[in-house]
Length: 128
Image 1 (cartoon, rainbow, N blue to C red):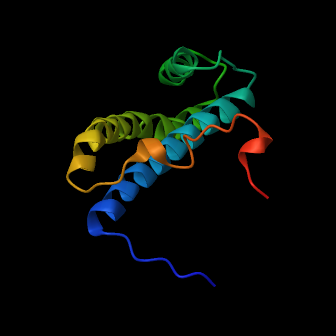
Image 2: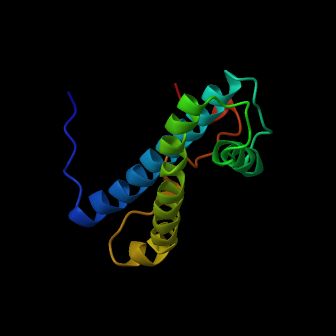
């Protein structure tokens, strides 16, 4: 077993920032997928992307659209109401992430050099 030193509070805070943002994005994706899946059960689909989900949200909000039964129309807004809050939180974390380069100078981790952003040009880059 290999023991690694504990991270500094600043470094752990930086990692927490990115993990929290990633979790919020996964939650947003889950909500959007749930809306799409539930409406697809009634034959209602929309293109991928922001415009598509906005179109589906308009269908949910339109009481004159009879493709969505009343019971389902009562359930679906629970999903739609989560999206603005998630988008707002993600945007806030994006703003905080933009400060990371200046935070690196004060001891926060540099996320531009982590394993997720590395590029491998060929298998020869690895020594066996």
